Length: 455
Ligand code: FCB
Image (cartoon, rainbow, N blue to C red; front, side, top):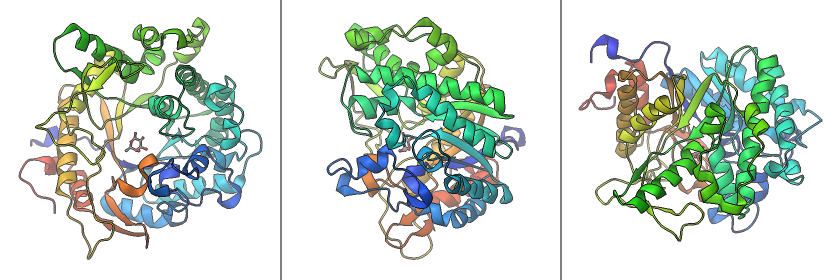
């Protein structure tokens, strides 16, 4: 690798987590319950009855976790704020003790030379707001802007990178259509309404930031290339619908000021046909786009798969992760190039990328060998390099995740961490992938070259 093909010195090398997945102590210090607190405590919702009550105990162990980040050489950490820690009822009264936790975390990061990248919403709506209709209530846009303003006021002097929402597609698909995620509804009419209100809330927070903030704000979406299983017209049409539903439903309104045509076809009578004025509000410049990439989908027509009418074709020769996601690094390059082509040259960050592979619950000794995750990281970082070689403005990469953690309805059964967590003792052990990532960071990408083994 020639010295100039290395990643630039300004590149952000991070790891990501989210509040409910790692913090634990969800009701400590005056916090209100979130929809995830409620959902996880509802029997049958989460595998094995697991909850985020303890999780990685990051709420109490964040200083140790920041030391680990420093040891790995990270210069950025992406985490989310729990809305109901800061505003226990969702609006109105601010809980200073909740806010103080994030102040202490930000200060610890900054003194370790690590840049905080804060996500305002990673799926844990205050339960009190869900009782008022949650994402289905149009007022949620003002509620969200009010909450965002509290955070901007408290932390924008030290936080230079903000994201409004994490993966709004998952919020609506899992929360309102399949019911696999909180609040667990299954309603064709609700999903597109929640989606539209998520967009409005995003825009209202961006607007609040323009009035109040000094740095940068963006949005984080999960994208997945949809490759047609064949050239048959039905498969091509299904692929276009799947792409509209997952990849364009949120980005077209934000960047182009309209919803994809296919949305009407997908939702039929359930499509709300939002007023044009809403799109003027939604289409506001953002400073960067965060992309979470895990896999792609080879797509075929499947009329039984309502409402999109698209299915996924398994690729027998390819590797799959423990969450049954095809390992497909080329899809990351494809995604980054595709976003630039459709939406223009906006600064991009890979805000999540990683994989669950089997790791044992406890570890003897000091290191855990996870060759599949090392290979996953290596090939996906090479895919980022490839996009950069094509001139795409990718400015950072955040591995999902810093820690093994509460993987939503899978509970603790899927481990994505660079650091292994023994959930009995809370001991952290770096996996070989953590050491490998540290070496990539130290060498600014040289360690990605094939044949070079992790230190
Ligand atoms: C993403 C989520 C993140 C984590 C990973 C595996 O969809 O943003 O919280 O669950 O998947």
